[in-house]
Image 1 (cartoon, one colour):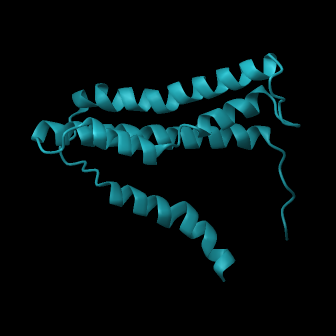
Image 2 (cartoon, rainbow, N blue to C red):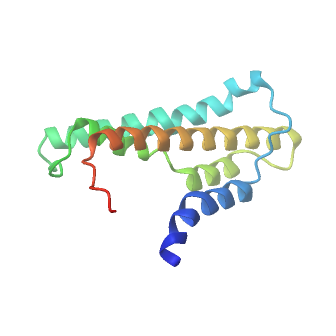
Length: 143
């Protein structure tokens, strides 16, 4: 029975626990405020990590400092690089260090950063999943 619970725990319970435990409030979200801190954090996680991981990995492969794993191509490397954007534990830690939560403005900026972290992690995970789903070979279904 524990094998049947693993997907439920790994894909629903733990992410939900992490989300609730992070303490994000959505009550006072102004659409104009989404263009500041949340967008910067989102772009850092989704675009910055993807580009950085992909380019440096590809550069090291081209320089023959490392070898590309067997069966891995450029699209597979891109999918794995996108999964690097799922870094919300450290990103939340940095956000807590960056904004002073003893002031109302600091609390607001911290909540905006948390929103950007969740959006960036979520989009990175979804995009990386779909790229890898299209690239990796499909295992035969058990009956």
